[in-house]
Length: 139
Image (cartoon, rainbow, N blue to C red; front, top):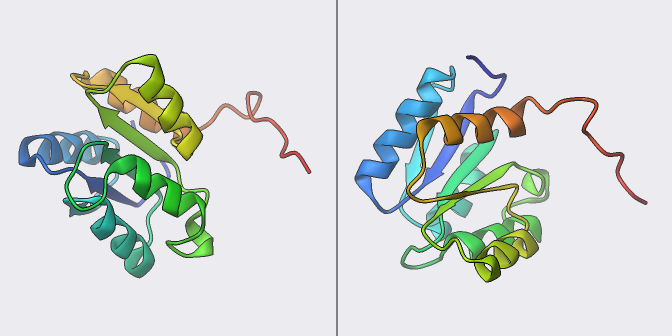
């Protein structure tokens, strides 16, 4: 299952999850992976290298995934990256957390523990959206 994306940034402080997500992305044909451990490093990686998608944890030292998403959506990471698809992987699955993630601008929310099938489905949904489901931008 290949997608058109070439580069991904994985933001995760757990080496096991980093490797798991990388394997999943590699299986989809995304071979250029930038791995960082917190949101601040993610913003720097996005500024310097760019990416087609970001997959990040919520709870990390220095800067968490939701704050990182807020800053990206606000243009802090450079205006050209404001609309990058962002998948948030988190153990915080209560309704308030889902709402906070959505308000920050997360594109897709996946609760931990997750299956590879869930991750692959989320990446596919964001990188190969069904043209009939895309809504026109509002003015």
